[in-house]
Image 1 (cartoon, one colour):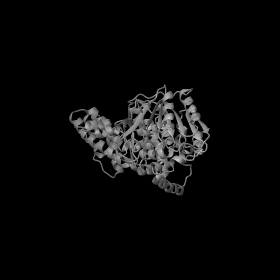
Image 2: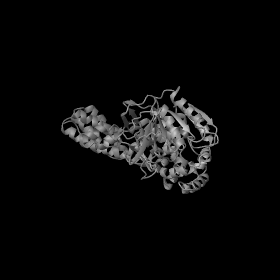
Image 3: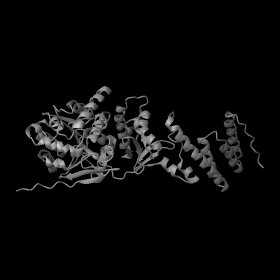
Image 4: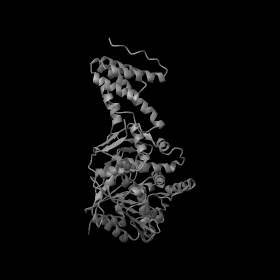
Length: 513
């Protein structure tokens, strides 16, 4: 009697408030990371022969990792269901915990948009993409608000039957298995109960319905294999066709059959395509960026991002909105900025909030790509990850004495961004803090007889604030004490002209004693 091989060890990756369950098994020169569909359970998956057979075949030609999403399966069930942006961070956390620098991503069903978003965000970590029964969006372009509401009604009815004897999932998504094996449907209904709760499923369906990364497709240059059954009853093949058409390096294989689940129907055909894609003639991926890349953001005097000392070109951002999003997060200094505020900032006047969530994910992907991560996203807000990036504005805030404040100030906050109401208050606050510290430090320099340093500082103050009366007076006084009569006269004339614009009369400059 042969014994069944033991299951792979279930490990747990820490991921901001939750543990994510994953398994790694198999061997080969290439690694495949499977991005889960709506809900699954990596341990119970091995129970059903067809699923086990598929997983064991993966293990014969590659190192394979699969995991359960936050709030599903063997992962922690408490807390909220992660949205698309959080799932990108979760996938990164799982890969990091498993020691995987780069891999092929296998996006199945609802895992498709997330796989594409991760590839656009972290191109150096993705060797290629395999998408099965999915697309960049699960709903067609132009879906109306009424159509979304109608789908929500259907989702509620579907979730109410999830895991019960009335669940339509198994016969609807794997009709060939349901017809061939009487044990499949009851097994799958038990599996559903271990995959997600009814409430979690409803949230997952809502998030999946709104996921849309079509705008990112032109930026995803990794080789991509799309596998889709022509009569898929859940996600029409049109979603795969439009996704393949939008990707620069994609091949679509249209498969016969009407099963949505990958392990049902003709598995041999698509598995052969999969194995050939991963182990055959594959375009090399981008060399992975070394762990611990140093990311530095400059916002005082100008806006720039440096990665390992090299400034990022403007073209690398992909869009002006991505740069604006990054700037807003920088000004927040690590505090969360609500998604609603970001909607209003990036798309003023837009009223369709549902679609803005997907658009924001696209822009956030651009920011993360440039910052090598650097952002923490939740369903409610987004913030800069100050453990992953450094920022001159944060250094300025943390400076304690006057000399340090003056040294940390290199110019106005984001000076090229004019007419931005969200920036007026923070910019004035920074400028006022510098001015107060600079005046105090100026007195210290004068008392110490450091005339050259005092003159340089007062010049900085006046460049920033040309109507600062106190700075004008001190400028004239420093030059006068230094015996620079001609320069003092010129400074006094500038002082008089500036104050005249304000209707302030200036006393005559004192004569040399």
